[in-house]
Length: 253
Image (cartoon, rainbow, N blue to C red):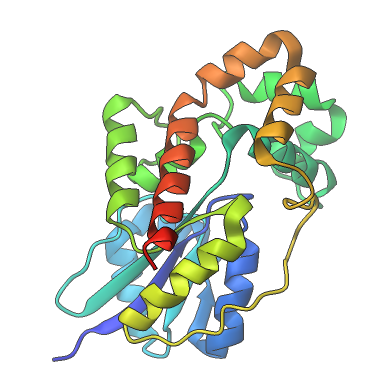
C-alpha cells in the first residue's frame, strides 16, 4: 500500500512559523491543519499524531507548536519534517516584543507587560521559569519534553536531525530557505508555490544584519549578556550549523 506523504512543521515559537503556515494553507487549503489541541498533542505524542492523521485522511500538511517528540516514518506515513532555526540572541527580542503585545493570559505575556526588556530576560534566565529563550530550539528539534534542560548529547541529536533534514530553514535567510525547499519538495513529488507574504512580523528581519542585531541586544543586556550566551550556547551552534548547511546546499545547485 502506498504511504501517505505528510509535511510536518515543527512550529517553533517566533521562528517565522506563521509565515510558513501561511504558505502551507495557501497550497493545501483544508488539507492543511494548524493543530491547536496542544494538550492532546503533548500527552499523546507519536501515537496521537498518527491516530489524528488516520482520522483525517484529507490532511497533507500539519503544523503544531507541541510536537516535542521526534517524528519518524512508519508503514503508513512518509513524514517530511520541517524546521526553522533562528539566531537565538536575535530571537530574544522578538519573543519579548510579541509577548508584550499579545492578548493572552499566559505567564510570559503577563510578565512581559509589566517588565522592561532587561527585566524580562533576567526573569527568563531563571531555572524555575519556562525555558522559552534558553536553548529552546535545541530542545524542540532534539525532541525533548517541556521542563527538560538539554545536555551535550541533546545538542548532538539536534545537529544530527538538521544534518539529515532536507527541510531545515533559517529565519534570516527565509527567501533562500524557500529556494532550497522548492527543489527538495519537488524531489519528494510535491510541487509547492513557495511565494509568501510575511505574517505575524513585529520586526523586519531584513532591515539589519542578524549578527549586528544580536550584538546590539547583548550590549543592551549589559551584565546579563554572559548568562544569556551561556544559556543559549547550544542554540548558537545549532543556528550556525543550519545556516552553513543551507548555504552549502544552495551553492551545489
